[in-house]
Length: 258
Image 1: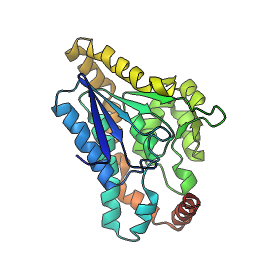
Image 2: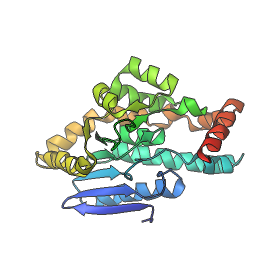
Image 3: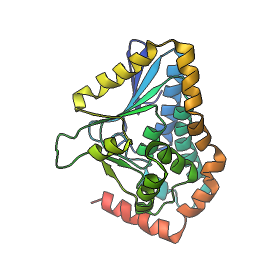
Image 4: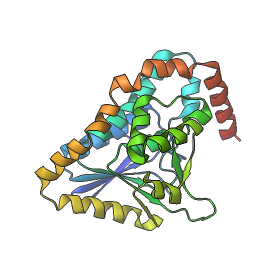
C-alpha cells in the first residue's frame, strides 16, 4: 500500500481515500495504489467500498504538469495513462459495489472514476455561491474524449446531453448534476460518508447472489466501454502530442502555477 491511499474499515465496508495533496492529481503511484487497495478490499471479503477524496476536491484528474514533463517519452506517457485506465477498469469490474463519495470538485479523470462507480454522492459546498462541479472538461484543455469515456457519460445522462457536455467541456454545478442524473444524491459534507455506508449497507442486506448477479448484468455495458478498442490509447497519445493539445495543456499549467 502507498501513503497516497488511506483505508478505513466500517464493519464489512471499506473506505478508500485518495490522499495526494493538494488536489489528488492522478499519477502512476496513486493509480497503482488505488488498484491495489480496490483489489485488497475484494480479497479481504469486504461487502462494499466507498471511494473518497479530500474536503475540497475528489480528484482533479490526471497530473498534467507531470505528464508534460515527460516530453516526447511515449513509453512513459503510455505507462501513466495505462495506470489511470487500469483504475477505471478495476472500478468497473469490481465484484462488490462501489460508491463514489464526491467530497469536492470532480473534473476530467475524477469524473471518469466517479462514472465507473455504482452510485455517486456529492457534497454540497460550504459556499453556495461556489458550488462543487463535476464533468469531462477535456476539450477545454485540448484533449479528445475517447469513445469509451463518452459511453460512460452517455450511460449516466443520455446521448444528446452527454454529447453537448463533452464537446463544450462543461463542468456541471452540483445541483444540476443531481437534476440530470450525473450524481445520485447531494448531501451536506458531514453526511457524505454516512449516506455512502447506508447505501452500501442496504445492498449488503439483500440476498447476495441475486443482487450481485443482477448488478453484473446491469454493469456489463460499463465494463465493455473500457475495452481497449473503445479507448484506443495509442491514438489518444498521438492527440496528446498535437500542436493544439500542447498549447492548451501548457496554458493550463501556466494557470495552475499562478
